Image (cartoon, rainbow, N blue to C red; front, side, top):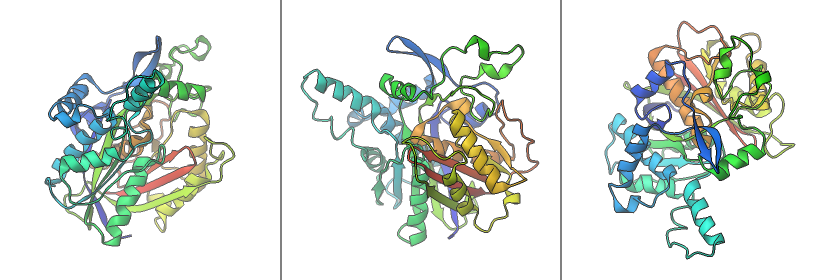
Length: 394
């Protein structure tokens, strides 16, 4: 690969709205979930904090054109501004943008569709504010970039596919800088109903027979990477995360992209992958290339909190790493599954662990923490078996 550096990151999620706040939250053992009412029923979700919501509202009302934008766009605007400032880029610079989303303008689309069903007069903004490309387009407008603005949706691996695209553009010589990531605002009654129909969502109340005396792990609604769970426990979160990519090795870089991998496997069902996740095996092997697997200090897993999703990825890791499994972690037990943004929030966790040389464990799988963290592998996969693995080094 051509040397490519990650020079900055910006994010907003239930973990916080600044890198310092996010890291402080990772050092705490508590989760970020709250119970909210959806159609009269309480459900666990991971929304932005009140401070985060206020920051988004400030963006929404600073420009009349932003008032009608969906949260998914506003989240991306906030994270992108933050990343660009951290990288020292300026408005009007020549850099590309690729920010995707699994579901796009969820709230607005549902609002306009409901109005259509009710035979209400349609807003002329219904189409331009719900089209998928409007996330990157508005970020491009806001940052006044002279480069290309690209959007895509590859379900839950969207953000890491954006990273792949950025690497491809930089490696081709068609750009020197690229802003890549994902944004998602899926906390609506309709979206939660879809997840519940799949029977993968966490119950709002823990069943009595699931609780054991003295078992503190039952205090966590999402049991991501708990390989002993007996029910699915996925919880939705919202947020956005983007990183700045630059060609070459930069002295001030947060990390270097050492390898990338991707794979798609033949599916037997719309939402499933094989029991040992062949797509993950192929993606991880491709990302590792000639790198000695024994030098990988940690893996930030996709691990959505479902029984099959967690176990299949774990088995894939065992197959690839044989007898020496690296330290394993995930952030979904704390911040939930943010669909298209989740892969980049996992990259954020990896970058923070590299920066602070500190491993962040889950409450469930207490693997021995590495003494040093110099190489971290990040995984993501979505419906359709589209797996991506990215190898980051200090």
